[in-house]
Image (tube, rainbow, N blue to C red; front, top):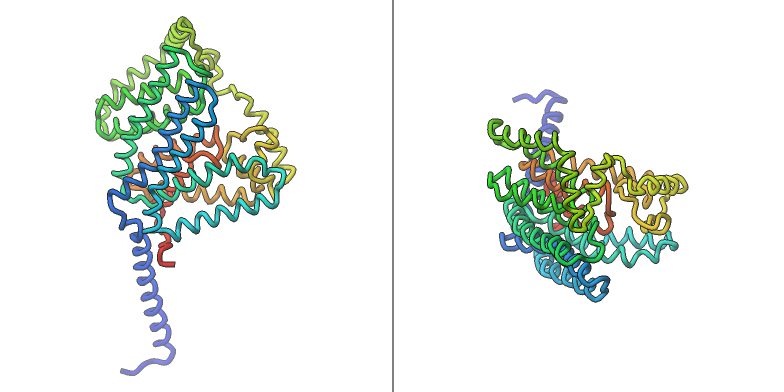
Length: 418
């Protein structure tokens, strides 16, 4: 066969390109199904259980603290217990993804060391910030990013939510029976109870068991009574979205919608009755008072002042930022907003890059997720609270959510093969 000059070379290049393309796809599939997929069910359970056990320990710490007051020994024991729980994960790390864990810790340590060297004025805040960051947040991220079985994840969450719910109700009952230190309001309590309230709402729509609905509402009422409005509003958002997009027929949804409408129509009377009832037993709900005053969405609790100071600090150092810990130095507390935290710590340029990376990971993971409602639950649990409270350096929930998002990405690097 006669080969026409100049034609065989383009055909050869196309053939080579196609071969490389399909070989690349095969490599991508191997990376997607690499180390994580070899984890046994037991190992998956250990990683998930160790991660969420720390939330139960924090609730127990809150209960003990409120009962006996400030006690550094109790605080240290609970934190030590959380670390010991995480130690059970280390053999799994070593066996499957030691290099991955090492690289994550190395990158985090490098960022912290640069911040430590450049911003000497913030160093006094590093000890209290870095301990939970390195001992709770990063391990949570590594664990959840490695777990590849959503059914195991949900099953462990169900069990841990029961434990957190029972502990939280013991705390609430103790307030009514005995009175406890600073019991009228606890932001920490509301965000600890947010997890069981979300999980039981999800399970109610999935398994159609009324007991889950009742426990979810009980968790919400507990948050509403002594917790922050942020957690309560997040639960309301998830409850409405999950209910409307559940697979229930509308004829079954109608009674709930009708009941909710009647409650909304008479909510003023209900709130007044609830306030009087709580007043008789010597209890005052901060969120309830804000609702009665019509300030549930407008009352800022001093956050506007914090935002103004944060913007001033960002404006003063837009390129270099003010460094990790600068919010505690300049504001006396955190900014109560994840994005402001990032801009204040790393400057506008790096802050924008991190925010874009966050939004990309969140968007892609949601698009690729096969269980979008559970992904939305994790979003409500890990991301939304950081928009109104907390800081990314100590809140393990955010890192749990980011770990969950990263394992939903279309390509995950096989660190073991590096």
